[in-house]
Length: 306
Image (cartoon, rainbow, N blue to C red; front, side, top):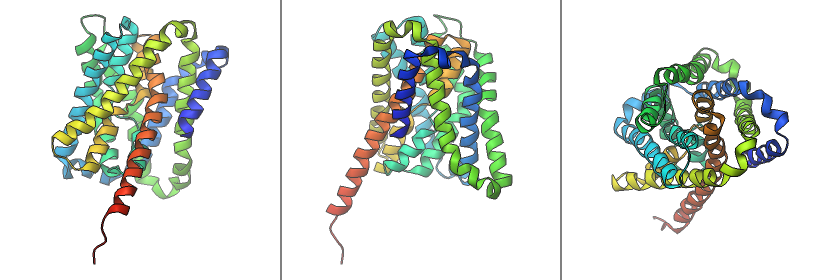
């Protein structure tokens, strides 16, 4: 829970003192690059082998991610009457891949961590094509969506640092071990700074848009978590896989949404991603606590065999 506490604290600070972080908008992409480099450094050959070992489950997870979340984002945004820029931000958020923090939540929730890591990897790779195309599919008739520019942007912002991280991990894993221990904290700090920058830059409009954006973020995340779980249950998947797909579906790479929104739409369009980054870690932590307690109760209630 330290991440959402720190993120809320920085967001509040930026709201009342926007001049401190407001001038660092150009650092959003480099900061996200640091996060994705850290993700790449955690990946091993086994994560990619998992794609071949469990193709059906991973295909279902990717379908849930890229079918449900953009649709939920568009439906929630329209039902709340969000403006063009804010609607674009919510749809773009829904079209992004799973977030790296979802893997920690999978661990805490007693879900399938290996599947979660592989799902995050798979959706991140697919995002180069699907994130721009899905954003265009939902918004193309209402505004200009620079699909090719977004594809190139995702290659630079996401795939390049992830690839460098994978390569470094493969060649220098032993030497990088101390660095990998601190990189999660560096990634958390980077995301918190991104949130602070967006809140500072969007400060002039914050009061009038905060309530509907917060409502959109809440419902978008809730529908994603519930949709991922119940679709997995309907398909007959076992409990640990249901939890994993719920978490992977409902938790987005909000840092990517922020970077793409402020590059190709506006700062206002980046606000849903910044607030989602705070909220989905809170909701994910609460859900993980509930599921971990439930797992412990099931262990205690299970009859002993002789």
